[in-house]
View (cartoon, rainbow, N blue to C red):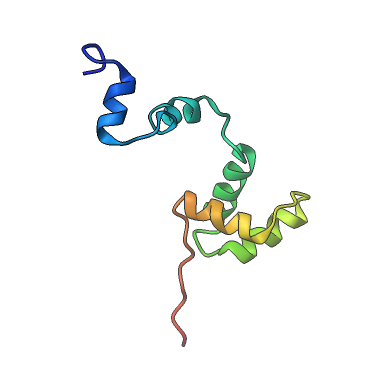
Amino acid sequence: MKKQHPLKYLLAAIKLAKSVFYYPVSASKRPVAYEKELARIDSIYHGHKGRYGYRRVHLTLKHEGITLNHKTVQRLMGKLNLKSTVRPKK
C-alpha cells in the first residue's frame, strides 16, 4: 500500500509514529554488541557440557581477563538460550 498512498497517511490511519516504521531498518545496521563475549560465553558453556550457570561463566571470564558485570553475563546467556542443568540431590 506504500506505493499507492503516502506513508504519512498510512501511519496516521493506524496511529503509529514514523519512528516505529523505520526502527527495524536502523536496528539492522547497528553492529552487534558483545559479539566476542557472546562467542566466548557459548564456548565456555558448551565446553562444560551445559553445567555452568551465569555465575561460573562470569568467574571464568573474569579469570581470563574479560570484565563483564554478572547481570550482563546473565542477560547474554538468556539471549543465547543457555541455561545450566540442575543436578538432582543425592
